[in-house]
Length: 298
Image (cartoon, rainbow, N blue to C red):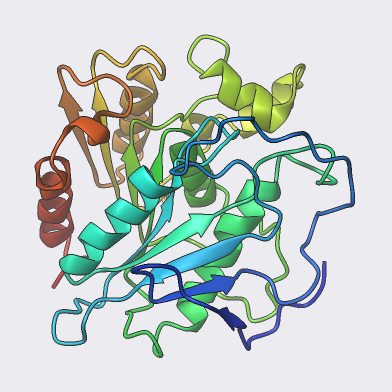
């Protein structure tokens, strides 16, 4: 890996985004030249199908509304695509309206042809995103002790991985910047890679067709929880047929037994991706209340 430069290169903004910045200035770690698979003939404009240059899209609130809190958002998509607009951008705009700085992470999707080790590619990008936000917190009006990570579905697996594997950096971190999120928000998350619980497509896309037991256990984040895991808010639908709600329940139980502050909000109905069928205030309102109770929003 190359040394990450402190200076960041900013690019032209997209609609409603205040800035889009590259995660890495120079060569991207753990990458290699490979054969790129063909993109689908019909592409949904709200989805991202390929990420070769990971980025952060920034949404900073007006200074008079800023709370000092920040959330880095990991969209879902089975580690195959990113549900970038619906789960990423729209959520970031809602946070921004409520005085919370938001960053949508366009992380690399695991791919053996473009990565030396695809298992750690998304985690590298999540750790690098935390590093960038913390190292630039003062400039962006953010409190370095109130930087959280949010993930949807497979993005929830990525967020919970970053929250339970922070002691083992997979990026260069010469400044020894704290890579532990201060808090965690999980929305219908994939948590486990175990046969009985995992979302198979997410596991296959991240770990391959025949991962070893040790690899499955390492990326089963319910097994990685300890007393240092960040305080967590989790929401899921009980009738989710794609990602079993037991992912959230098991993670909550592990947090509880390790005396980690956690809140679990289960909708009886809604299925997977319920945020697309609810007004933002309905499903984000409880998140704001939890953030207020937990003093992440002052």
